[in-house]
Image (cartoon, rainbow, N blue to C red; front, side, top):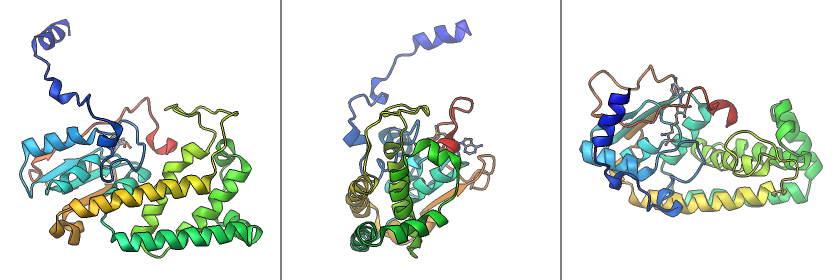
Length: 275
Ligand SMILES: C[S@@+](CC[C@H](N)C(=O)[O-])C[C@H]1O[C@@H](n2cnc3c(N)ncnc32)[C@H](O)[C@@H]1O
């Protein structure tokens, strides 16, 4: 072990891999910033590995794809991106981040959602609350993390989102919903581990959701603009994201050019439970 550490000391550090100069704005370009996923790649790191080690049309795999950074960088750099992750929420996020949606349709859907939710909250609040509470899952952990008023508004919002018949649009709103949950709960601000803060300031879930969604719509339009049109029109041929164990790679042996991955912190972070 000591010998190995000494050998490492002799290797000159290439500072260009530290990406220390990158700002949050840089690392959340296009759809990369949709969700605060733990140990997410700096997109520029995945991008550089992909661009320097593969060619257009090559297959790139991430067996622990998390929120989909490798898959997203693969498709925007005209490769084929394939990922697996055991966490259902992660695969939802990765799918949304890599699914082009017509920006006009997305804006229209946003407007409809906004007006409908406003009506539900201002008009027949009790009626919609009753309906929402019957539909959302019963789980004591929800009451552990959310104050009652917040939980009720979130329930009405979630019910409305789930009514949308267009899966891509529904999933897009669901990722926005997932992203605001931590802020709107009593999860201690800036804490990575699950810690309650009983004195935390209240965030209005509806306002927070619409602010988050607006930002995402803007970013999705940027993604739509830079994505190669052949890839955009045939996205299912260029990216595959599966919710499964990494031992079942989504690719035949010897077909992938490159694996870009960051494995889980298995014993220290409960990815699925915490999201
Ligand atoms: C460090 S995170 C990857 C983050 C990713 N690079 C990104 O940019 O979002 C590791 C991931 O491994 C996933 N994972 C853990 N065990 C797994 C398994 N057996 N098969 C597939 N994925 C697994 C976790 O759910 C987690 O999303």
